[in-house]
Image 1 (cartoon, rainbow, N blue to C red):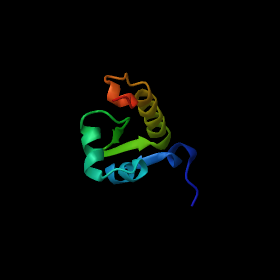
Image 2 (cartoon, rainbow, N blue to C red):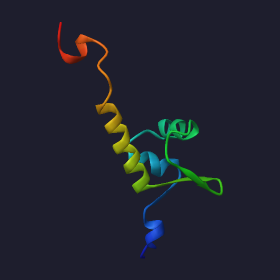
Image 3 (spheres, helix red, strand yellow):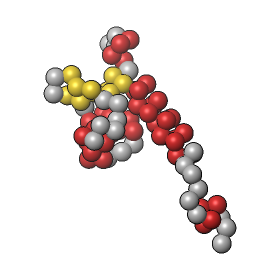
Length: 78
C-alpha cells in the first residue's frame, strides 16, 4: 500500500503523536489542550505532521540552549 505524499507525513490521534514524540499519551494530550503543539483536527481526531512536530522539537531545543544563566551554580561555580 502506497501512502499519498500529502498523508505520508500525517499522524492521526494523540497516541500516534505521543509515540512520535516519545511522551506518554496524557502528557501529549495536555500539550495539545494548552495549544503548545502544532496540531489540528480532522473531524474529531487531533492530527499533526511529522515535519511540523520535528520543527517544533528543534525550536524547543534551540530555546533551551539560549536560556539565560540565572545563578553561578548553573555554570558549575560554587
